[in-house]
Amino acid sequence: MRLPLVELHLHLEGTLEPELIFELAERNGVALPWGSLDELREQYAFSDLQTFLNLYYANLDVVRTRADFALLTTRYLERAAAGGVRHAEVFFDPQAHTSRGVELGEALGGVHDALQDGERTLGISSKLIVAFLRDRPAAEALDVLKQVLAGPVPVDGIGLDSAEVGYPPELFAEVFALGKANGLRLVAHAGEEGPPAYVWTALDLLGVERVDHGIRSLEDDALVQRLVDERMPLTVCPLSNVRLRVVETIADHPLPQMLELGLLVTVNSDDPAYFGGYIDDNMAALQEAFGLSAAQRALLARNGVEASFLDPAGKAQLF
Ligand code: HPA
Ligand code: ZN
View 1 (cartoon, rainbow, N blue to C red):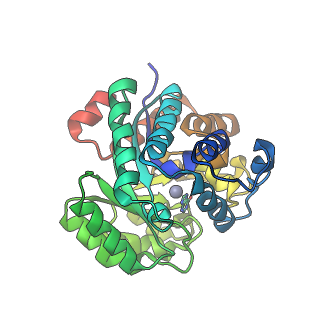
View 2 (tube, protein in one colour; view 1 turned 90 degrees about the horizontal axis):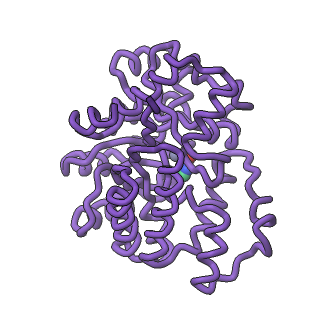
View 3 (tube, rainbow, N blue to C red; view 1 turned 30 degrees about the horizontal axis):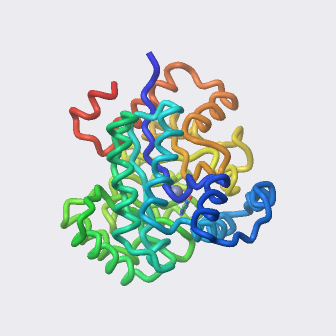
């Protein structure tokens, strides 16, 4: 039996492939700073999270209309389906678009339409998580959340992403309290470049139900114990960690050690158009580096299903 692949850490904006950047630039009449695909691809050597984010935000200039957001989402779902993904809980960054003049409803509406279509035509169920940019003011995040809650597009959860160090989770306590009061599921990036202290406060002051990345938790034994005891999922992204220099090579990745410690680890792709691969590519890279056993592969698949926000019937359908 083919194991079900569940994607729990994927930024839709991070699926914007170089080819689609050129396609959208053409259709929207946007002049790109790159003369060719190769010239654009030369920019993809990152030294840390910030150097990646600079390109990630700049490239979004070509994504403008409701149809563009739908196309971005559909292209992702088609690639995910080809790689065996059955369920995807995707991040979308409203502020990356509203801050450059795109209407929230156009952006979110295009994504939502495409997710609905994908469920019907590709058989991929999905959940939509709006993520707030932690390097922008919390007051802006609160305002965007209120607009989302008042708008026509239903969302399933909220998250926290962008530059981590210097922007601890607790800055967004009010935003997360409002999300929780409205029945939204709560996640946050923590412990990617930031210290274990950020994982503690994401748990204690935001009340997150999953930690995105969280690999620096390994530096704090008491934190690891707590994550194990609470069966707190960590959405780990191996190829991202290599490309953003969180770990040196895939062979140095602590994923086997994390499984050994009993952490509820899942494998995900983060920003596949930027980091060299989708979730199936991440699994293949781990397989090549570590020769995962059938039991380890099955455990990772089970963890993905368990850590999802599907209800029990939805989880049962995947296995
Ligand atoms: N980390 C933080 N913010 C992000 C990322 C990431 O890997 N990708 C897109 N926004
Ligand atoms: Zn991420």
